[in-house]
Length: 244
Image 1: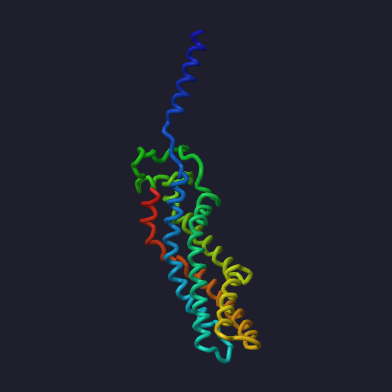
Image 2 (image 1 turned 135 degrees about the horizontal axis):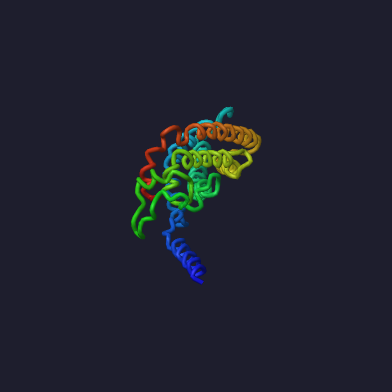
């Protein structure tokens, strides 16, 4: 009888120990949204700077090969270009948080799972932030904020940048809605400015071709310049503080 009581007591003791260990909280929904928006907001600044060049090149190249385009037509079409690219830029920037959340938490290696095996950091009390020491000490991938912080340079940022570039490249495709909507807006603007008949046909062919070429050139430029090298590193501290 004593033997069975001893075994029972041991089981109870182990159970109590297992269920009283303080869990290491994962990066839950509010945390996920916070880190995703932190990256997205900062990347939007870089995208805005690159889009200044994009708009300039579109306005510069749109009329290549056309003998003469009235200043009123250029003015109307350039306005359509500016409004269209501004709308696209805003829409793209607004999509970044969701893109980055998927990049961090859904793509392999995923920042998910338990962080107790082995235990590297101790969950701070409610209302107390993680520390940079926690960031340094969490040296394997799991679901807590210090893990994301620790692997920021190795996995998180390169993957984010790659996904942003791929998304931009896809949206700048000649089959994409942006190309179709922008060319339509420019051609509609030319009609309203008085372009018609054979002149409109020539104008339409040239503008569509020139805009597509500019899209392709900018797509390559964006891929080579967006967060190039250490360009985006100055955002790291702000992002880590929001994460931790």
